[in-house]
Image (cartoon, rainbow, N blue to C red):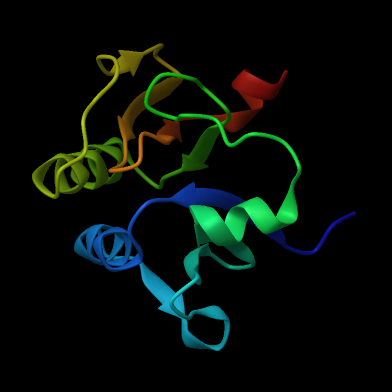
Length: 135
């Protein structure tokens, strides 16, 4: 099994993106952060690399998706409570994010999402009993 995950996302503006995620309470690993890429710490061994588009392009020959009009990935993170989900999404909206859909309450699972400044969709869930969702 894997020990870490690094999700790589193309971004337009490094300073703006870092300020946005800091406003949500996230930190960056300075050992893997410079003007081309920033290592956003989302949990123990969970990282999102924010890469300026020109630098991101050096990792792929494919065209970079326009995340404002095309879905390239849906990232989903678990939270300890419904309140934690709400707080995070509300902070994101206050920092300039938009909400692509209303909250969903399935009883055993509560979820909300936001689209960040570059259009990437971030989902957050709280599961009352994860075993119900995973069968």
